[in-house]
Amino acid sequence: MLNPRFAATTFAAALALYAAAACAQNFPTKPVRIVTSAVGGGGDVITRLIAQAVSASLGQQMIVDNRGGVISSETVAKAVPDGYTLLSQPNSFWLLPFMQNVSYDPVKDFVPVALTVNSPNLIVVHPSLPVKSVKELIAFAKAHPGQLNFAAGSNGSSSHLAAELFKRMAAIDIVHISYRGAGPALNDTLGGQVSLLFTNTAAAGPHIKTGRLRALAITSAKPSALAPGLPTVASAGLPGYEAAAIYGVFAPAGTPAAIVSRLNQEIVRALNRPDVREKFFNAGVEVIGGSAEQLGVAMKDDMARLGKLIKEAGIHE
Image (cartoon, rainbow, N blue to C red; front, side, top):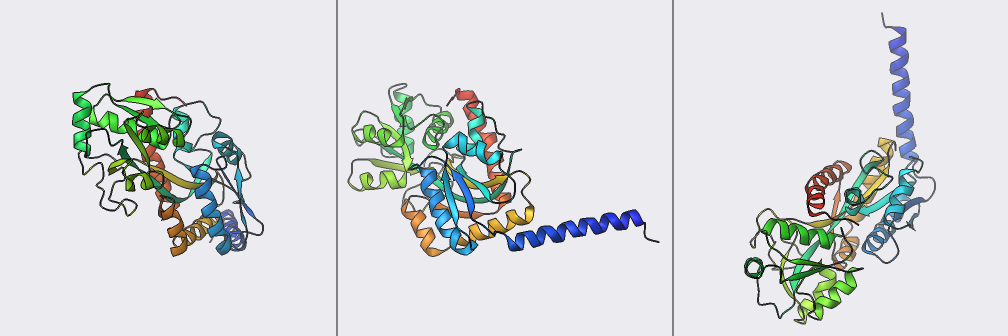
């Protein structure tokens, strides 16, 4: 004979699953807010491209809400977990707690929704520097310790961490020159005040074509169509090296799994449209369109690898 209490529990669980599925099927019934960094930055551009693409397939408008780095994460962490408030951020979101005190926990306060895109950097040098490969750069730096400098935007930015990782893995002494943003860092490299720069393909591309910068390698794990013919850092002299700005979409912890799944499906479908992929490519960004699980794995691997680097290098925001 079936235990009445067991039967009631089973029925309640089945009812909850049915309600969740029905909720996801009807979702969304109003606009979805996607919170991101300040207007004009890389995160803003990427988020707007995502929002424009997803709005059409989702059946509701996805509204971009620019709040700035820390504020955007704190806003979403406190939001109602119903799928109507999302966060779009690069890996600085989960690496920032290694550099300063923040009120959110990137693992406990959020649930991954989709691994969206990544943006690798190029290693570029001023033409006056007598190196034409990664191996030559490392050899030159070792022969002239402390004499080479590299430009980077804000502390803990993708370009800064890519350079610090290169410096650590190559065991070279090069001096970090910090700038308030990627633009001034690029300008001083073009002017020859700085020898070396890690920057994205969209920013460096025009200057590489005119010869004002020399590209040595791309920081992605595999060769990229963003930089045809250019080797990876790993294959060009520093095995195991990989660095890129990884972007993802997150929801507040407690968001129903069925809604997370629906959001992932729509985001991935939108990102894989040829016209959308082309827009990202022109912005120097590679579309990934990965699962929530892939984002979670990438996030934890990144925190373990770069979190250690941040601590050992004493990097603070």
